[in-house]
Image (cartoon, rainbow, N blue to C red; front, side, top):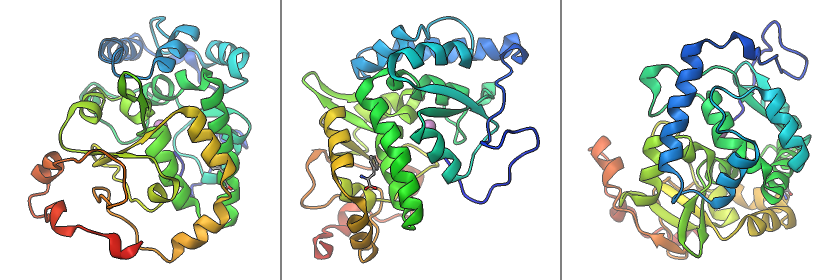
Amino acid sequence: MAEAELSRPAGTAEDWTVPQDWAAYSPAEHAMWDRLFARQAAMLPDRVVPEFIAGLDMLRMDKPGIPDFEALSERLMKATGWQVVAVPGLVPDRVFFEHLANRRFVAGRFIRRPDQLDYLEEPDVFHDVFGHVPLLSHPVFADYMQAYGEGGLRADGLGAIDRLARLYWYTVEFGLIRQDSGLKLYGAGIVSSFGESKFALDDASPNRIGFGLERLMRTQYRIDDYQQSYFVIDSFDDLLRQTIETDFAPLYRRLEGQPDLEPETVLPEDHVYTLGTQAYARAKAPGCPLPSEELPHDDRT
Ligand code: PHE
Ligand code: CO
């Protein structure tokens, strides 16, 4: 995702893009991609939304090695008009939103080290490309991403980027979706992570709560570990419709008067699919109070 107040590194274009320089990847780097790919390809079939697998197939992403962004963009362009462009690292918010609004997905070029196989905080090419690109081949999700970029430019003018960032986090990065066969993964941060693609669906620790725009924009998130709550959408159509049809400006204003919610908080009005035990998070932070001791929060709504 993006971050403000960065200065543009030498060698980057005005829009912060750089050549991917695909020929410069070493055999070891390609092998790292293959290793990550094989692991997720074995893990995901029953867990991920089928549209993700369809995207992998359509974009021929099972080809060995780190994908060449040009070849990938050519296929993606035919499907939904999106492209993948390389950036050296985090880019400023406005730059990020401008790219999305123009159907360009910005991806890191570097690949993680062997000791970062299971979890890393800074997105690498495996997260960015394996995690995000397959669903960009889905017309409705593709439109959502563009609308998000446009919404970001607008939110910037309204001083509400932090609110909108939570929507990205809990949908694009860590979203779950309800299908007839049960809950499925679609968030890129989950599907590119071996550990979290099990945890998010199977573990008793996290909450799984029905998606609500305002609810989610009040909720803080953690970037250092598995999520304590996941939000479940009904469909990509519903996600797109709700976000496009809602004018966020009054929402942002209303949110200013409300306290933030902790990542693990469950509200009485939530549609709870799973009430998490929070055992995982608690084991890592033994000093924290039990989430049940903080309930209810309904005095705030
Ligand atoms: N409707 C939002 C607004 O009024 C924009 C938006 C659309 C945000 C889609 C996210 C996703 O600003
Ligand atoms: Co990401």
